[in-house]
Length: 287
Image (cartoon, rainbow, N blue to C red):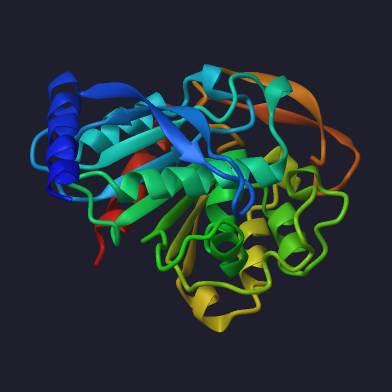
């Protein structure tokens, strides 16, 4: 045990000296299955460490969009140990939902073993697809499916999730929705009561620009305790993907509050990016 602690201390001192490192994260889809590995970027805290870990989950465009770096750098400066998972590089390479959830659990377990990180103070934040995974990480199914034992996320922050999809899942009706393919219909029917912050885009094409969509999702959470600790902050006049750093549009299946093709519009909004960082930081720092 002493040798393990000593080795970990050496590892963390190397990480600290280099500010960031490319690491391998173990994950397993099924109980007893052979462990596989996933690439990730680990950042050591700058300045005064706060003993907290933060898992950062990218959106469906893939890691190559480089959206997570701005959050990794920002929260490392606030004293967090951050871990940006490279779940897939481009959208065409997106794994199935069961695998994506296994990645998130792998990230939680990885951070829990690092020196300088309190296993009870590891949080997660995600964008779009990553936001789905973040919200799902408040469910009992998530911890049972991936053998978490007593390990749980401390807090969860979801940036611009598609809330009409989440509402369908909360109602037990996820069938036919791509991000939930292969998951049991009941996966969002039992909750862990983990504090959850949702930052919603007031003009999200996926939700037909309905700024009440995420509030409606919360109203459909069947666990009063989870609903009570779930907060929604709407960023008015912002679109899905406000932190992508570019303006573009594309047809997508599952947009406009339906299961048919629709055009998604993304407009870069640096003001919303800064506001989002501050909102998540305040949320994570609140006892």
